[in-house]
Image (cartoon, rainbow, N blue to C red; front, top):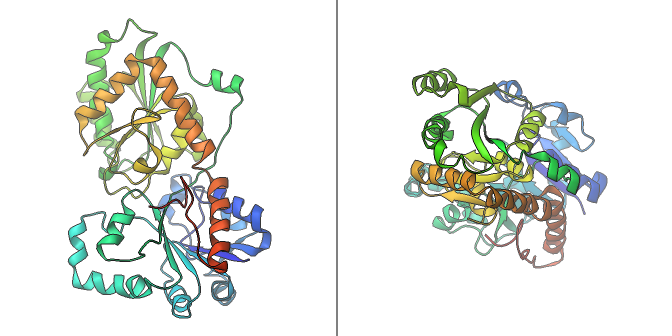
Amino acid sequence: MTITFLSNYINHHQIPFCNACYKLLGDDFCFIQASPMEQERIDMGWHTDGTKLPYVRCMYEEEEKCLSLIEECDVLLAGWSEKEEPVQKRLLEGKPVIRVSERIYREGQWKAVSPKGLWYKYKEHFRFRNSKAYLLCAGGYVASDFRLIHCYPNKMFKWGYFPETVTYSNEQWEALKAKEGTVSIVWAGRFIPLKHPELMIQLAADLKEKKDLWQNGPFDDFCIHMAGSGEMEQELMELAKEKEVEDKLVFHGFMEPEKVRRLMEKSHIHVFTSNHLEGWGAVVNEAMNSGCAEVADQRAGAVPYLIQHGVNGMMYEKGSYDKLLEAVNYLIENPTKCREMGRKAYETITGLWNAESAASELVRFAKEILEGEPVPAKEGPLSRA
């Protein structure tokens, strides 16, 4: 069985999954990179070395070969790219296609009534609703969007992004995070409006004011690490100065993904403030894998799939800053619970939401498509959305 994965470009969020597919299928798996990576991503530390992997082919360098791989594979995994025509060709020929999609109405489901938008959705999705076309929903709200336009009936399944999974021995786990002194809180991403990094400055101010309330425990101070950069950086630094919390914040600038992970490993809490415009949010996977207790806005795509509130992290509703602050305060005041949630978060990633599990389920699912009717997984990747 051959599987071809078509997407815009290979990156560190996709490589572990693709490596796992290649391990299972060998040369019967390939990834087609439709376009070069944007300079902004390269500047953020996203390496382009992925194009040297044995299963990666670049359509802009060998178009004819790539089109042949798309046409002739047994199952096409179609992520986002500007190369829709070969996907349509397969679907018109009745060949299996598994699409991967984030939200299509993340700016508001009212857009579902747009005549122009509906035409494109009909062309790409609706007219194939009874074909061998399936949808992997990369985010907790994707299925809701597609149900509005009556696409993929009973053929939508949970999916996501699967960054590198790290496992720790018991000794390594015990040594990761300080058990007293300073609570380390980490935030990672681009400093842009949809990610709301400004909330971390307010959080620093409020924690500084309330610090006396939790100083009787093992922690008597805190530090917020800001890993990233972007258009709001100067504004954030000025706000930190205005609120007199410069000493409680460390601005690290853009860091290579490996260095962000090292920072997460030393942090007790990861705060994820992205709103509904965040399709997934792979930093949530990474922080949970690093044993952080997660505090996240439930509107971001990864959050409903990965977090069980009060078990392996905490969700807050509708961008409520008060609920965010309440959750962080709770974790600081209850260090044992914070540690337990971090452990459960780690187990969620290492036990279920990881590249190896996703690749195994995908290969199983693809074989079942070719044999007849595929069966959803019971939980996690490829369970029913």
